[in-house]
Image 1 (cartoon, rainbow, N blue to C red):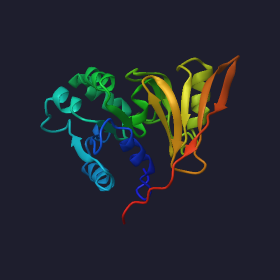
Image 2 (cartoon, rainbow, N blue to C red):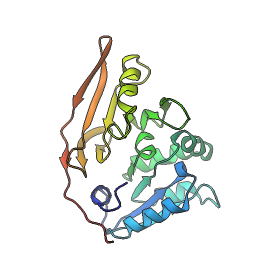
Image 3 (tube, helix red, strand yellow):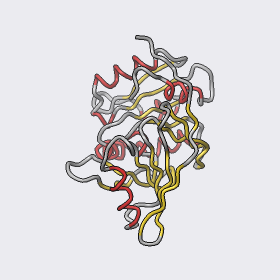
Image 4 (spheres, rainbow, N blue to C red):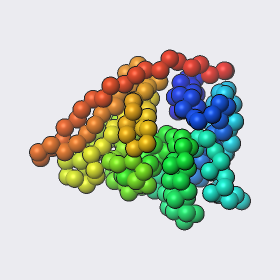
Length: 223
């Protein structure tokens, strides 16, 4: 998302269980778009890791063997609903849970952030933002782009107030939530004003609580 600042990518790499970790990019949500895969390699080849990628729209490897030998699985953005449908058809949710329970770092952006939670707020379909049932590794709802798309905040407030989704974690662009197991450990950011919030029902409305955010030092990309 920030090709000139690899702070969040470097932070993800630093959480792996070994030095120079293997990082697998999963671009299902974009239909394995070549341009997205190239952008991934452009960024991660500048970090101390061994990048690779997984295609599901092509000759697909033994998913369990391939994914369980990774140190980090990094999921890209795109159409969350379509991504989850493809994953479920391939039996990937169980494999991803095995990877998580074995210590593989699961990470991602946009669709790749929503997918780990019970529910998400998605623009996968034309029209208004909608709730979406996700993998359920983490409890609650995830709403990314909280400051980047004007309809995000009011839609999330409405869905939470109506109990259409569980209580939510809302993330501005540039903010990343770091969970250890199923517990939120910290929120870090690559941007000075990026924020994160807990949004939960309160009476007939909602209560929005801002969370502490630690800004990461900038990590300049090579031009």
